Length: 520
Image (cartoon, rainbow, N blue to C red; front, side):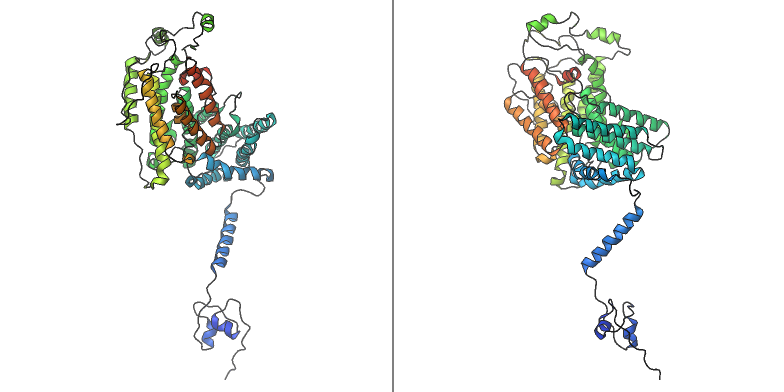
């Protein structure tokens, strides 16, 4: 009989029996062969601890991520690391409607970053750098440092290499330029360049589509952020948008809340049509004189500084519009704004969808107020014998027209110096303030445009204090200097002009003081 083979030393991960007998286990699972040769019933193996399993999973994920990463080592400068970290810690959280969109935004940013890491990382670093210098933005040296970063982004934009991702990379760099200005560059005394950037975006889209290019998912994702800024700027400047909605609107995803637009995605085509209507009205608004009712200023006005002759302006127009057409288009827009409802199919709970619903209601009320002021521009409260709107305009100056916005809405009490149209505008402004003050302060950071429209209509101290609280809540949770700049425009331009009996229409004042108001 052959003698049994000598038993070897035990193994570390052997079964219970082999470890108890201090013999080497061959670790065959579920029952080891050593126990079978020893004519024992194998009792199995000890389960691995959850901590060890988690550590092994993390190590495997790290190895996989390193092997799949498209960013070569050394592509990101060590000096830019802290600024890029600032970008990811601050910008998505302060820019977006909610934290649920942060991972989605970071994933799309990383997709663009991986295709060309050097210029894209430099752009992300520039935003973080602007955040770090925002507290010292009044310093001329700080401003020059930010402008130097901005010049580097422009240089990278000019030297982008042609590739399949050129369109997305160019959009990303242009979006970064807008973000830098929102964070630190849009200061008094400095001309806002966001409108110029948006015009370049429009040219880029036109060239891309004319050459047979298609807009990818990432391209539409970036365009939605730029299109939102473009629509607000276009509404304030009363011009057509540079970024058409057909370039980025995807109706198959319109039922989902967007990171910036919320539930208002389907409202954007109507706002684009409102911009087109406002552009055709702008010609007359820009020709209205400044109405400073003092004897010295009235005496110094030139002879031709009078209310423009509407008939002469129509005759000089290459394609004279008909007032009846504008009436019909305005009535159609008012009806569609009043009956518009967001498409909601995501079944979110109330606390999660509250900010989206408040934004949708505020933007709809803001659009109705905007359209109302296109048809019924405000009148200065002093010197009622002088009527600057006595000549015909695009729209006849009608009395208070009930808008089908709220079934139980009642106009505000009409004071002695408030016209019925101003009272209707104040009622719409109160609707905006109601929707904007409903959600918690952290959920109002993207309501600057409708709050701006409402602020331009209030005249009582209590209403202005309430508007100031809304501005404070927006500024607290959205670290952009455009909030304070918009507030300054309302207080120093609109309210001061109204209190002194001057021309206080924000549509006129934005034409007279271009670049001062960007409620983005």
